Each structure stands twice: as C-alpha cells, then as structure tokens.
Length: 615
Image (cartoon, rainbow, N blue to C red; front, side, top):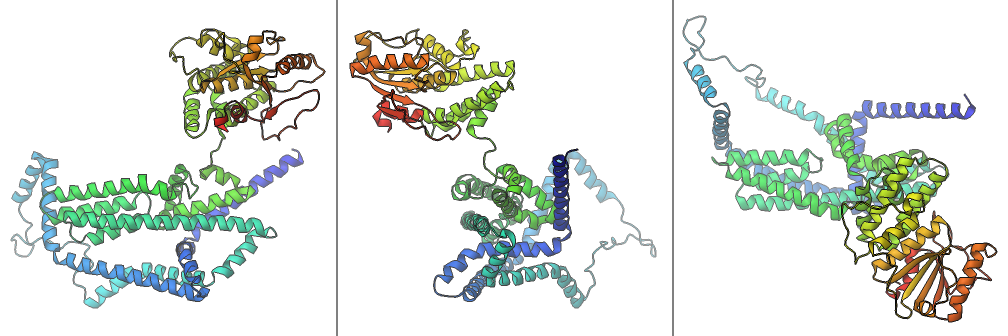
C-alpha cells in the first residue's frame, strides 16, 4: 500500500471515529444539550427584537432585559386567557362527558353490529360475583392501579409536584441559559469566531452571519405564520360555535412548531372537543374541515412565499432530519430538527471538509442543468430533458438555453467521447433524445410536429450532429433552406468552418432565428464556394462565421475568398461567432487579414445582432 493510500485510509478512519464520537455525545449528553439547544433557539428568535430595541439607545443588558420582560408579559397574558377558558371548560365537563359516552357507545354498536349487542346482553345476564363472607352478590372490586384513591390532599399535592418537577426544572434551566445568552451575546459571538475561525476570521464571520441570518429569518417567518394560523383558527372556530376557541387556536399555533405531528394532534384534540360539545357530529366535522383548510392554505400558499427557500434545505432532508432528531432527542428533537439541520448545511457550505453535508441536505442542485442534460441524454431519458428545457424556457430565451445548457453538455459529451467512455448504445440513445428534443423545443414553428413518425436515417447517425440536425430540419420544411427569391438584406447566413462544434453552433443559431420567424440558413465551407449570384449576395443581411480557422490553412483561404466577395458588395455585415464554453474568457478580436464588423461570444449575443429588439 502506497503512502497516499495509507494516508487516505487513516483519514477515513479518523472521520468515522469522530462521527461516532459526535453521535455518542449527542445521545449521551441529551440532558445537558437539550436545554442549551432550546435556549440557543430562543436566543435566535429574540435576537432581532434585541437589535431593534438597542437602536433606541439602550445597551445590550437593557435591551435584553426589556425583551425578556416583554416575552414574560406576553406569556402571562396568553396564560391568563387560557386559564379563564379552561375554567369555563371545567364547568361543562359532566355534560361533555355524557355526549362523549353516547358517541362512543353509538360507534361501538355500529362497528360491532349484532355481535356487540349479544356481548352486551351476556354481560347484563351474567351474575355478579358473590361476597365470600355472606355468599350474596357483592359490589365490584375497586379499580386496580388507582394510586390517588384514598390519598390525603398533602400526598396528592406532593404527587402532582413530583410529576411537574422535571418539566419545570427544564424550563428553568432554559430560561437561565437564555438570559446569559442574551446578556453575553457579543462576547460569546467573539469567542465562537475565534474558536471556529482560527486565523481565518473572515471565513468564520461569513459562516456565522449566514447561519444567524437564515435561522433568524426562519424563526421569524415561522412565528408569523403560526401566529396567523392561530388567529384565523380562533376566528373560524368561534364563528361555528366551538366552546373555548382560544384554547384550541393557541394549541394549534404552538403545536405547529413541531413538524408533521404537532398540528394533526391539535386538530384531533379540537375535533374531540367539538364531538363532546353537542350530541351530533356536525360541529366535529366542521372543526376538522376548518383546521384542514387552514393548514393547506398556510403550507401551500403562505409558507412558500415567506420562507420557502430561505432555509436552504431540501424537502427530503427535512423529513430525514425530523426522523433522526426525533429518535435522538424525542419531541424536543422533533421541534428543533429543522434549525439543527440548517446549521449543518451552513457548515457544509463554508467548511470544505463538510461540503458533503450541503450536497446531501441542502437544496442546491447536485447537478447543473448541463450535467443533467448530458446524463439524461446518454440514458435516453427524453421526458426529463424536455421537462427541464420547458421549465428553463419559461424564464429565459431559447438562445440562452443553448448557451448555458446544450453547448456545455456537448462539451462534456465530447470529452468523454474522445476518451472512449461512451458506448455505442449510449451514443444511439443520446442521438435519438437530442433529435427529439430539438424537434420539440426548436423546430420550425410553421411545420406541425408529427408524433410517432419514424425519423429517417441522417448524418446525425454518423456523429456530425450539426449536419444531422440540419438535414432533419430541411426534411421537415420540404428540403429547401428558404424562399428562392428573398427580399434584399433579409437572409442571415451561418457559415460553419468545418469542425463538428462549429456545425452544431451554426445549426443551433439557425434554429433560434427560424424559431423567431427570421430567414436563416446554414452552410458549411465545403458547400459555400465563392458566391457569384448577385441576387443571392444582395439578399444577405448578416453573415456569421462560426469559429475561426487558421489564415494559412486551406479552410482559411476559402473563408477569406468567400468573405472578400461579400465585402465587395458592401451589403452584409460580417460577425465572428466564437461561443464561450467551460467558463473560458472571451477571445481577443482577430487581427489582419481578418476584418469583421463585430464579434459575438454567445448565441444570445448573436441573436441581438440579427434582431435589435433582443438587445
């Protein structure tokens, strides 16, 4: 084993051990990490409020204490309203219990049918158990397991306080940590920057600012949405007459912070209350319908506009993170799954060693559109290629699609083809997919697209894709490149210099121009001998030369001869088209003996020369 392989193996082993140690720390340190994580989440929520108060002239301590005071007042107000609602609810509990028992009995009879009726009859006819002392039927035994029966008020109060001690203690720890996080916010930030950034303070600052902005924006948007859901739910439930609508609205707003399971639990609780409030089922059905409609509108119409893309997480990663953190930290982990995963994605974007986290969990596309085009073409997946193209063309012109997607994809294919990495079957699938794609998105708009027609053999099968696409276009239009007698200056000539790449670029430009209703024609240097027809020369309005051959080569002499004749007429403008691919810089304009009126580095720039409206 070489030193490089040994180093890679040791690095992989160290990463596995570090990951295992981190997971062990997360699981074993749950009791310590959960309060700190909750306090940190609350600090991110309150950080924008603290900043706004500091702008009024208060210091960090005064702004933090003011913010905590406002939060305490808000919590006390909500708790007071809920206490009043719950007190009113307790007065009607006997009536609600009767309605629920009647509904449960009705449902049981409907579900069991005749067998349930026979079972009830058997229970009624069964003799009561006899008292062992008197031999007479006695009362049933007390319900086992009732720990509160016969207890004194002091012992009952002690039992209740013992059950509440754990949650109250956690809340107290969270509040204490939150106070110190807000008071020492600046100092803690500086320490974390020094600890994580080391000597590269700029990178650490960018990473922390990115995480803070995303988390604050996410929490603020989520709080606004959930508060709006609570208000709308309260108004609608009050309108249909549900008792204590504020309780169920607040419950829905609070539980909605817990993804996937929180809001359904609140909806079921409100529906149970509605079922207990009246003998019929109408109120329960209306309650479920209202809660379902409110959630659908909030999840599909409101949230995507507020923070649909602000978190930077993919939908799949949200589900996976909810499962993982829910299994590790329980309900608290489920509540904090999105913020914690967001922190991992931000770390992946700014730390090269953790870039795989951004790839796995982030919403950044794993493949560029050009890579998707190439990958789908060699597998013959025309459906996804056309879907991507149509989605792109809804926002961008066809020429930009060719510049940004198609041509870079062909560069990827050319590199693999020259390396012998593309099989014959993959080449055949790619040719068929590309032919169908261009017929779909860049065909002649005056010609109907005939589905199911077998494409005749063309030069596309020989590997010269530009000439193959041209042949297919000419066959679809009747075999003629354009009208025989064209008006003066109405024809755009795209002249390819003989390479496969230049033929493809020239044909793509022609298709873009034809798609816009212009008269564009594609010729190669072998076909374009020195033109002598004055009428044909007068029809030329613009001539594009795709790629530039060497001036001393036979191709160069042929180009100079053809362009010289065109210049003598003094009618057509000459433009050199050299598309940039792979992020290459723009090539400098050619010197003597070449004399062009202009140059273009993309199809979109070339279209702007033909159609001034596109500039």
